[in-house]
Image 1 (cartoon, rainbow, N blue to C red):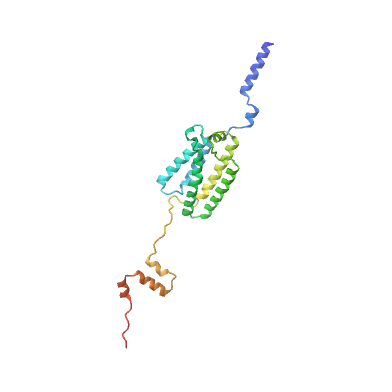
Image 2: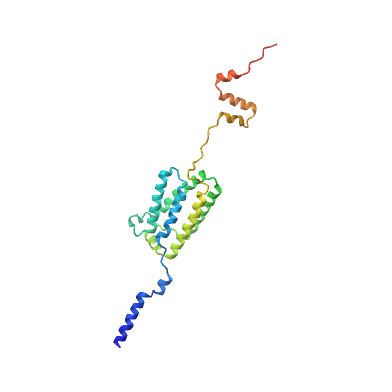
Length: 225
């Protein structure tokens, strides 16, 4: 009898170690943090296309993106930066984003796509932040717990997918070497194409000429008969 009890106990111990429980089988693990890295890098590149002085701003924005990614997805591994998680999100949403859209409107050749990107961003921010679906947490402890939650990881992946679409709309029509157009001084030759009446255009031309030159070109009066 004791031998049978020993065999039964050993068998039950073996199955406990090898067969997963129903709870663990129904609740999968969250997505691996590296899943989100390509999305962060792609979004960075599309946003950086709108920035001026890319030889400086591109690497700076890349560094900001990588630090934000590490703080957001490896918050337990970088506890010294964990407290800045909310600040990084605030800077990205409240500072970088408005400047990015301002630059996009100045540079793009297709303003409709920028308006569409702005609409997508505002709607996504209201929905995901308002309903707390996959949006980064301000509290480090909550963010660490959310990184282990499977549902949160899926919602967060959806947010990154929407941001990719948003970035494509934003950067569409912006070339890498795009420059903000500056006003060009009016050339004297353009006065000929002016919509002013001939008399007013003559006065305008006279104002542009030196006093002596203007006097020299004035027609001489005919001698009285």
